Length: 117
Image (cartoon, rainbow, N blue to C red; front, side):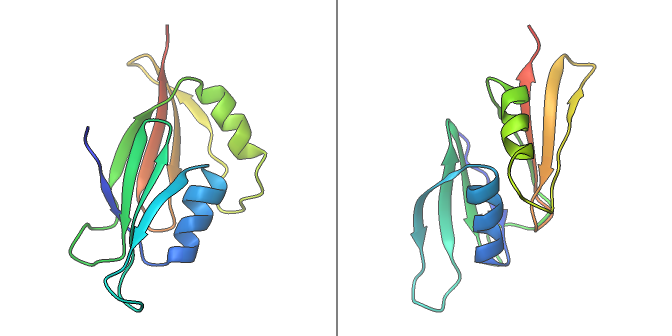
């Protein structure tokens, strides 16, 4: 399994986006001391992402692809949430996938996709 690390700058914004909006669950959080940067693991089904406030762990602007079973259902779930900063749409691709792209508050991009049958 490959586990990407995304750079974050604001823990509360990250939690609102990833947990409240996208539906990831918090697996664990770690800080070396109370006022040190946060490192956390989140997951959604089989997808696992590490989010880090540590400046050396990653640069903002990363991108990953996450395969899901029903992109239209997930799209509907997201649109029914009251998250003002993202109203993603589904796009068909020439390589036979349906894709839903979201960009987090730190310019990291997640492409949720489903292969057409």
